[in-house]
Every structure is written in structure tokens, then in C-alpha cells.
Image (cartoon, rainbow, N blue to C red; front, side):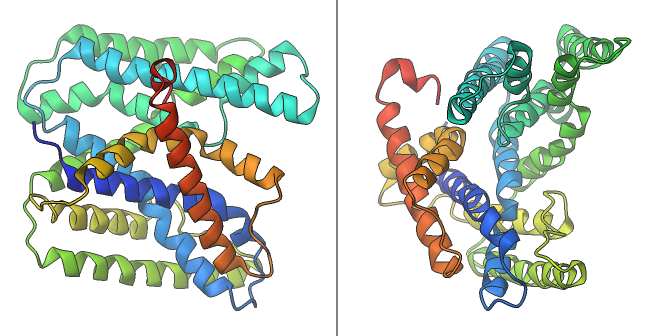
Length: 339
């Protein structure tokens, strides 16, 4: 199968958009509504919200397009790998948080922190849940018989085991947190997985290279205007339409996906660079909160007096640092598997 460099570019774009969300979230919510910076900051914060749906759409078009989906390799290479990454990075962030605070606390509280994961680790849990049902979708779309043991095993795990974790007389926080990590609410992202597969089946002409950005910008402008109105109503900077399932984000994610899909077959000059950056995106996602914390400890942050250039500059430095660190780390055989 030929490398889909246009999808690599889409993945890189989505990754940078996530960095913008996490780097600028604080300055956006602290920005005074009467500040001249609020309007452009609101637009930027709104326009990047289609990033997470893009990752699910990419999974859909790459996995559901396969003629066959071998269950055991799929389980080892995707579900178990993501679960292992969740455990390792959750442990790392939990331990780092205890060291930074100077107080370890009880072992039980520490275990709860590991199971809960850092604020951005929910994405891995959501991917795991969707991947568990990916073979079911693949079977339905391609008319291939699915081994009933897979479906039975998935349902036993997600329904029976999870339900019993919440049946303790005095619900244990640790067990309850495990059930939240495997919540059926995450299956809503299957919508984007199916959408990505469907759009991946379509062909887009050169006109899409102009119409898709226009749709994206128009939708981002309307959504940011609605967010501004709602923020004025509430009296503080709010993200009314920041939900990944809001209609504007659905449209913006679809427009971006169509734009990059229209580049299919294009001969890119820096294919090796595109491939390397794309392969680094998961590592960048995993480590970027740690890098944000390190930069802030060195006094590098977003100045409240200049939020727009500060946000752009900080995000650029964050992206450069994360991609560079991930690229270097991936050269080490033992570390490569953790990214």
C-alpha cells in the first residue's frame, strides 16, 4: 500500500492544532472580554477544535479501507499498544506530579491518579474503546464474517466486567475510574471514524482546495461569533461551541479532511520530512503537557499583555521542542516503543 502523504499532512496539522488548544486554553479563558485581543484569540481557539475529530477520521479511512483486518495483529498492534502507552505515560505524569508537589500522598491515591491519567490521556482511552469495535464496523462495511469470540470478548469486558466494578456496596474510586476509562460515551467518536472512511472513498477535485478552506473559515467565523456572544452573556470567556461534537466542529473537521484528501496523488517535495513528522505526532501528543510544564518552569509562557503574539510564539516553540524531542527519542530502540 502506497504511503498517503496527504493524510500525513492532515495528521501533522491536527497535532499542531491540539498544541494550540492546550497551550492557549489558559490565556483564552483569562482574557478580558473588552480586550482587543479577545476577538482574534476567540477565533483561533474556535478554529482549532476540529483537531481531535480529525484523528478519528484518519483512523477510519486507514483501517476501514483495508480488505482484511486480522484480529490478533490488530489487537496487539493497536489496542494493547495504546493500553500500554496509557499505563506508562499515566505512571510518568502521576509520579512527576508527586515530585513537583513535594508530597507523594497515599499509595491508593497515587494508584487512582495513575488510573485516571493526565488530562490529555482520555484520548487514548477513547481510541481504545473505538478500536475494540473497529472489527465490527469493518465486518459490517465489507461483508466479512467476524469471529464471534471477538464480539463476545469485547462485550464481556466492556459490559459485564465494567458493570460489576460499579456494584461494590461502597463504590471504590479506583474501580469506578476504570469504568470511566472504558465508557460507552467514547463510542460516539465512531461517527468520525465512519465519516473518515466514507470521505476517504470519495474523490475530490482541485476545486476542493478552494471551497474546503472557504467553508472552514466561514464556519470558524460564525462559531467564534457565537462563542463571543455567549461569553458576553456569561460575563467571561466561554467555549460554548468547543465541544468536539458541536455542528461547527463537525463541519470544520470534515472541511479540513476534504482539503487534504484533495491533495491525493500530488507529488510532494519533502516526502521524507512529512513522513518523519507524521510518525512523531503520537509522541508529540503524549509528551507536550510535560514540555509545557518545563517551559513554564523556566519562565517561558504567554504574556498576558500580548496574548496573540505570545500564543503564536509559545505554540511554535512548543511544537518545535516536542517534534525535535520525539524525533531524537525515536532513534533510541527502547524509547521508540513508548512514542
